[in-house]
Image 1 (cartoon, helix red, strand yellow):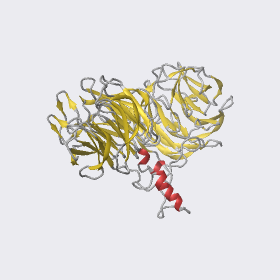
Image 2 (image 1 turned 180 degrees about the horizontal axis):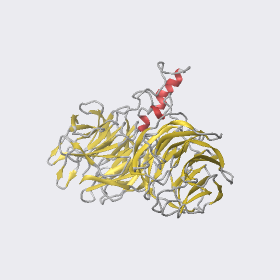
Image 3 (image 1 turned 120 degrees about the vertical axis):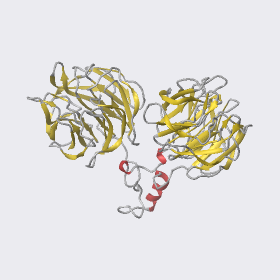
Image 4 (image 1 turned 45 degrees about the horizontal axis):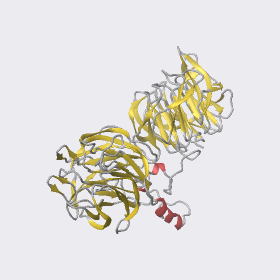
Length: 632
């Protein structure tokens, strides 16, 4: 990866030393800055409880070194960490104590506050801002999830509940947005994997299953995309199984490899590259061994070194796991030459993302809207699809409706696969969607042609009823500014092309109202626009019926008929549209399938110009961006 920071070898113009220093210290994008390599183990029993804190340097190999002490001798508890602080909380006998250390120093732990419930057998995870504790027993099984804000001191707050009460899960794994809890005792061994959105609050949601049910506490870690679970206890025996999952998607775990020794009641952690599993037991033995794996490549674990003594029921934390993406080197295509992140939102966000399309493909690709050039790979949808229910986005999250009744989401700042968001209120395809920064509305479709439903973009969950379109249609187009959504054209039964334009007020609910007419009745006039103007490109209509090169525009804040804008470079229908509020792009299309990307300047009129090419010749996907006209 190229450098994404200013230095004397690559800076353009005049740079002040203070700019370079600030970027290195504050922005966290200097080479190797923030890539945490310290892993900690807290407490445990050998076989009596100890208060030891030890550390390893994850990127090397070697034995653990003394760090300091907990305030108490403790075992059977949970831990987590961000880039600066590591935590240990709960423990046996059941307690609500939560303590912390600073990774950059060594020394004894200090009191942070109290968990909401005294318990043992709880497990933790974190991103840079929040730490979560889940499950446990006191003495009955608990489904409690609570959280703290890591940068402050204070007591934990209720977050929600696990899908089932249980204790002694695997150590939690996370990305910057999603946390995963797996397995445990409930009271028998469990194979459940479930997830939460860390920066919101709410109950956990089913993710899939482990390859085998197991509990009694075991090691786990993650990169920014993959979670790894190491060891555990099956009925009457410890195991050496290592499973992995792709955190951004949903599905069952797959086999990764084996630990060097079957064991349970171990602890795990890692950085974005390497995971470790320390200690544990396999009756009657208690181990001091530390194993490691390379997260990106499946395979058996390798010897790392030893703890200072045999230990079980301890916990761990690290300052470089996959939940801490803020501190990893930034992808150059998403960030400025200074390494400071490009802001997202109206007229600023430049990432245009397209997903799915003809032939039921699962490809997600992206372009940088304010430049020209070919699309690049972003990741994959959770399922291949075409004729989807459109896309919408806030400045940080994009959502794609599927051709069934569900939806996926991506996080713009991190390329990778999409993940399940929720279900639509009705099963349908061939509709479209629009959004502002808060709310996304799904419109029309082939079996529920007048249905409008909506989701709150920041909160994962199912769509709720919004109202009805004032006409029944599928294969429509849409756009929005921050207050008003526009729905255009389409196809009604038996085979009538429509020129209707309707509008809704996104922040309320209710039925659509008449706005005016398109210049040409057609279906698939997919659109986007700025905060003032909606632009609709191509479509299928005319006489004889064919793909069209027409571009229409409207002023969103008024009502009235559309006006001619200009022509596409190639007549087509089913092209995916999005914008950065200044420039609008039309990606792909059909009649026949094309890989063409066109663009126009929204505030002017005129013919489209060539932008570049898609990864594939494809139409009928869905597109959105982190800078479209709905993002005030």
